[in-house]
Image 1 (cartoon, rainbow, N blue to C red):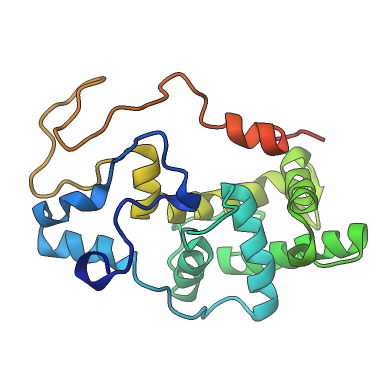
Image 2 (image 1 turned 180 degrees about the vertical axis):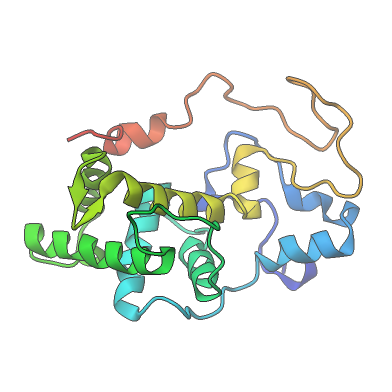
Length: 227
C-alpha cells in the first residue's frame, strides 16, 4: 500500500514515463503541506467515481479522444475523462464560452457524437473500436481544419474546448507533476530558491534538458497536421 491507504501512489507517472526527472516524487512532500492542501491533492489519487454526465456511448468516444490528446497509451493513466465528467456534471465551466458555440456541456456531447460519426463514415466502425493510428487521423483532422467548419462548428473552437479541458484535468494530477518535475503546492512552506536552474532540496534536475519532450510523440505518430 502507498501513502494514506492509496495503493502504489509513490513516484508514479502517466504510462510510467518517468525518465526525465528520475526519482522525483511530489508526494514525498505531503507531510509539509497543510491538511486542506494535502486532502485536495490526495483526493485526486482516489479511484474515480462513476461518470455522471457522459452516456456510455459518449464515454467510449471520450476516452479514445482524451488518450489521443494527451498521448496516454498505457497504464497508469490520469483519469482525465472522469475529471472532465465531474466538471460538466456540476456545470463547473471556465466561466465563458465562444458566442458561436453551444454551452460547454452540450458542445462536448455534440463534438463526441460528430467525431464518432466521422469514424463510422470513414472506417465503418466507431472511434473506440479503431486502432491508435486511425483514431489519431480523425482527431488530427479536426485540428488541421483550423477556422474551417466541422459538423456546424468552427473546428478551432472545438479544438480549444477539448484541449482546455483535457490539459486542465491532466496537469491537476500528481502523476503529471512527477512527469514534469513540478514540486506541487509547497504550502504553507513555500519556495525559497527562486530563479532559473535554482532548485529546492526536494527537486530533481532534468536528466534530458535538451530533449524535446514532444519528440517521442512525433516519432510515433507524426507532428500535428501530419497526414
